[in-house]
Image (cartoon, rainbow, N blue to C red; front, side, top):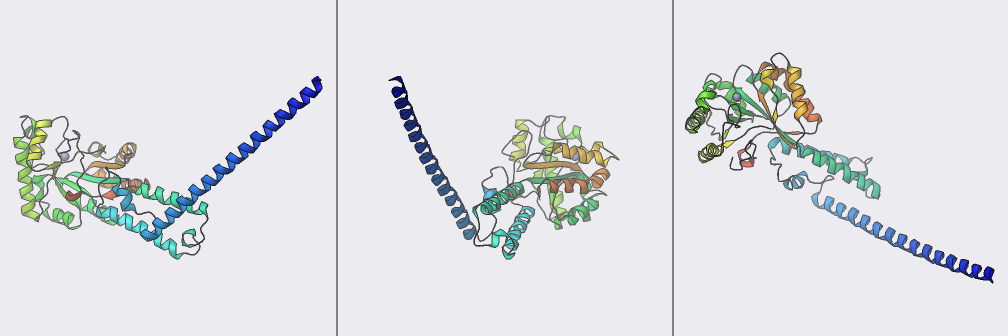
Amino acid sequence: MNFVMERSNETRIERANQAKKKRNRLIITINLILLSAIALTVILSYNIRQEQSGATLPKLTTLNSKQPDSLVPSDDHKQASTKDQNKGQDQKKDPQLPAAKGDKSPSQDSKIATDATAAALQKTKIVYLTFDDGPNQYTDQILNILSKNDIHATFFMIGSQLQDEKSSVERLIHEGHYPGLHSMSHNYNQLYKSGSSEHFIQEFKQEQALLYKLTGVKSSLIRAPYGSAPQIGYNFRTDIFEAGFKMWDWTVDSKDWSYEGKPDKVVQQVKRQIHRKQEVILMHEKKQTVQALPQIIAYLQHQGYSFAVYKPDHHVVVNFGKDSRL
Ligand SMILES: [Zn+2]
């Protein structure tokens, strides 16, 4: 009797197990079908996008416009994007590469998509090189290095030096760099000691007029000598804003002025601080900076940065007070 009951129990359990297994198999099959459908949709929509854009890589401009912080489709940046798209077209011509084939396998497609997206995202890293306290005897050497690397930079020049180095200032503007203002005197006491913005603004207006007289360019971007913090507070900034200026500080301080005869230290300092998607590097027109510059540029290129120059039409806010008016 017990034996019969045990048998029938076993049979019930066996049947239940079999039913369970069947259910599981059915669920797995349905899941697999769903996953395949999703994968197919993704692949198809990617192909359609590619055909619409006419390029093998996703359009970088589209990606950039989605980034609220990345401003700057500067000329340099646009050049980088164009180069990338050309790369894509080259791939199309090469029959060896999967991108050119009509019969792409899903794994090839997803790999291309991943590579392209990674490359595009990397390209959104932007760095602005800025050089303060010129123009002087090093300006032309800096311009030579920049020109050799096809890079444009932003210069914050001292007004009292403009006249003597007029040819360097003209060259700088002619070669596509931005001439920023850095006060007439660069004198801390004169600029800040009173606590009022009056003399500060007067110096910058004077320099703005002088640069205009010498070159015909009206610059509105200033950099406060010694940086805007802590000497420039909210009311001071309001006055700067109302005078029609924009003001830049920096995100990376190369401390180059303190490393006389030690260009390696300058390079190290920059390497240590670089990590943001958008960096503004403070440098000065000094001998050690000229010596360090090629290595700094090579490092930034290796890190995937695109070099940008300040453009008034694509202004980005870079000041210690995070004041969006400036
Ligand atoms: Zn300075």
